[in-house]
Length: 239
Ligand code: URA
Image (cartoon, rainbow, N blue to C red):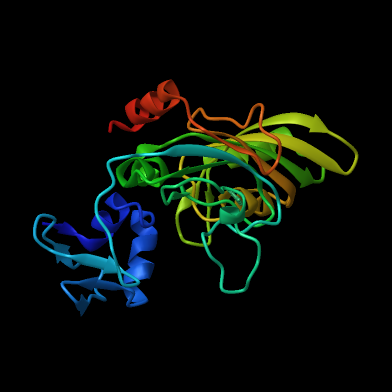
């Protein structure tokens, strides 16, 4: 028996975390009955699970994709407000792949997609400490004490302490370019941290996620990961 959210992630429906939302929207049935509790246990061998009326089964054909996300696209497969979503860019993939974590509407850069629920879960869970690297243009002239403050840690709106190893790439009269390395990936973490030290972000690009970059991809383009890249990701998080 496994939890319904884990089962839905194994079926490539969505990430484990987002599966709870799908369940709470009463879109999931098990043996014909609506399930709306995230803790519901599924018997993988015997139960028939449907999402939006369609039977779902664990995926064996895993796909791994990196998208160079442009600004202006929501990290979601569908959006009720009809904004452009990243799904509009990752087209022509027969398997249903979903984003690994999220980037803000106005953030650009590396966004992975997969239908491998376990790998996606581990890459995004703070416990696994996966490194994300961002280039941030921030307002004002960043100084060494601010750099130290970012590394020491700052309380985030969700109560957690966020840390960033910050390198100062360039300081101009009115802005600075920083390279920030984070290992947790909490919601809007970079923007919160920079704002907290008095340097709000004006532009944010994720240049590396778990060792994967967008090198060679124009904004809006995507590619499948090479087998050796997938193997590296698996090794990184112990799958
Ligand atoms: N941190 C942010 O503030 N925004 C992102 O999109 C990613 C990390």
